[in-house]
Amino acid sequence: MQIIEERGPTVLVGNKALVTGQIPRTTPYEKGSPRQVAWIDGKWQPDPWIHDDQAIVMNVKDRGLVVLTGCGHAGVINTLKCARELTGVNQIHAVIGGFHLTGPIFEPIVAPTVRALKEFNPGIIVPQHCTGWKATHLIAREFAEAFIPTSVGTTMVIGA
Image (cartoon, rainbow, N blue to C red; front, side, top):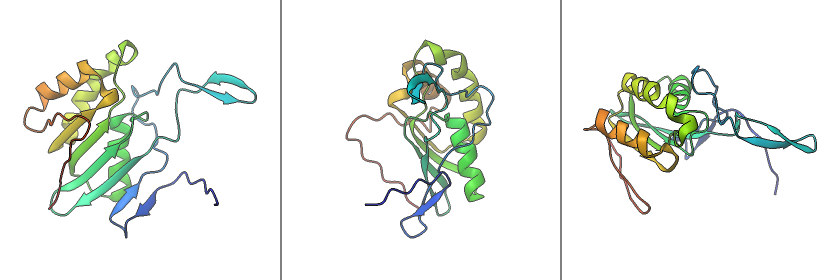
């Protein structure tokens, strides 16, 4: 087996899906995880950025982009900006996954994140695990028609 490190985007499934690669951090309030550390030069050191965070992006015909985040360490807004930039597609049909907004340390950025999400106007928004209760409830209120609650085992079919 050969391990190939790739920081850029990678196309999958016969050009039907894209893995973003490293997501640029351009949104001022999405500053990573302040308490995150990494083993660097033989000791634990602050490493808030978690640069290996990436997302999967698919373009659904006549609908727009479906963006699947993992834990969203790069920030959901940075992730959506990256998806648009990589694909050249403006419309966000769905954003599904963790938005990394849980806990007191992230509470100050919940409101600006939700405001920015409104500018993307996703048709479907599915905040999961690390989005946190406060952010999920605000998203549910602000995106009443687009919000879909999920749990383990939920299956979604998104098509043209």
